[in-house]
Length: 151
Image 1 (cartoon, rainbow, N blue to C red):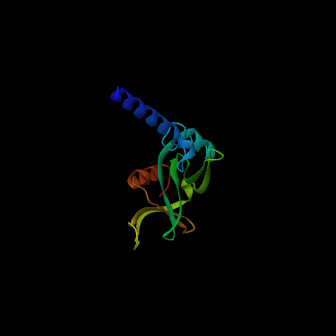
Image 2: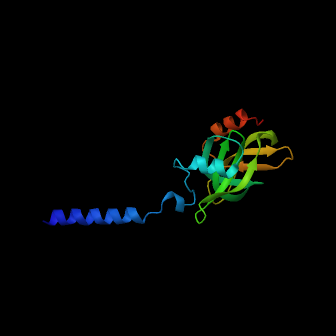
Image 3: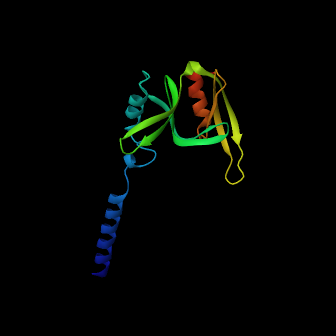
């Protein structure tokens, strides 16, 4: 009897805790790791692309200074950084670059005294503006950017 009671209590507690967990639409990343991400991202950028080639949750740097957290993604027609708004259920674009505006793609390390150093994939436009992204998939992102027309 005690075993059955304990099993029932465990089932109820695990069910309630699963129900109280936020879904992907209520997290900072939004639907990044769901099938919904691609159509939402394509609708957000409206660049004529039909698919997302690369996506990753990351940080964005300008002049080696941390600017924001968000989703970096690449389509057939550009590279983007966006933040998820869990109230409106949409991504807000924070960075956008067309492949024809990319003058170079390089790597750089941001050294920090209080935290782990960040290895960045740096995109430089024709005006010399550099933006870096701390990506785990730097090589894949670089390859996609080169294939869509950058560098």
